[in-house]
Image (cartoon, rainbow, N blue to C red; front, top):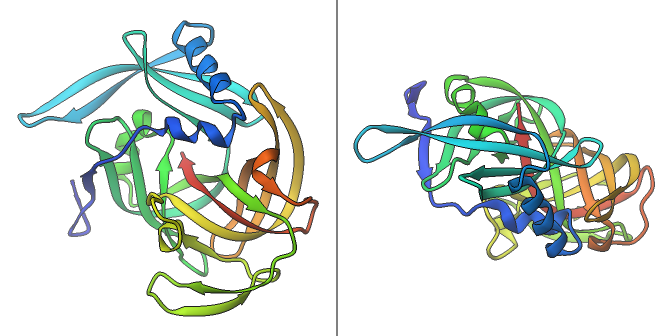
Length: 262
C-alpha cells in the first residue's frame, strides 16, 4: 500500500494489550475473570474476518470480538478465536479529532496496529495511537488520508498535587523549563520513561469535566481534559493510580496510553 509516495503499511513487533488491564482493574484477577466470561459467551459477540499478509499471499482469519461493559462509554474489548482469548484491552469512547494518517504500524503476529500521523488543528501535533477497532476497520485506516478519530487516554499514573516548574526534554533533545500548573504539554513517554511504547505519552492537562464511576474492577474518574496540542481528550484513571484530589479546573500531570477508534 503506497499513499502519496510513502509506504503507508509497515509491520512491527508488538505485544498484545493484556498489560493495560491495570488501567481499569485494581485486581488483575478481576480482569481475567471478565475475559473468561467473554470467552465463555456471557456477552454478545460479533464475528470479523481479518486479512493477514503471509510469506506467500494473504490469509483471512476469523475472530470474535466481545465488548464487556464496565461503565458508560467504557468497555473491556476481548478478541477471541476457537474459544481462546487472543487479546484484550480497555476501550474508552473518545473525543473526535480530524486526523491525517501517515503510517499504519501493524503487528506481525496480531490483528492489531498503531496509527501514526497528525491531529489537524492549529498545532498539528504528531502522535501515534493504538487503533482499538483495527481488526474491524483495517481497510478504512489503510485507504484514507484523513479520518475522524475519537482519541482517548488511559492513565497509568497521575498527580493532581501542586505542580512545579520543571525542566523537560523535547523530542529533539532540547531542554525547556515549564510551569506545569499553566502549561498543557504532550510528550512521547519514551523521552523520559524507560520501556515506554510508541503509543505511551506524558501530558499535563486541565480538568474540564469530572465524573466518579464504579466499574466491576474498581472505582475511578472519567474526565474530559484540556490538552492544548490535541485539544480536548477523554481520559480514565483508577483512583488508586492518582495522587491528590481533583475537581474541575485542576492541573494534572499524567502518564498513560493514547488510543483511538473510528
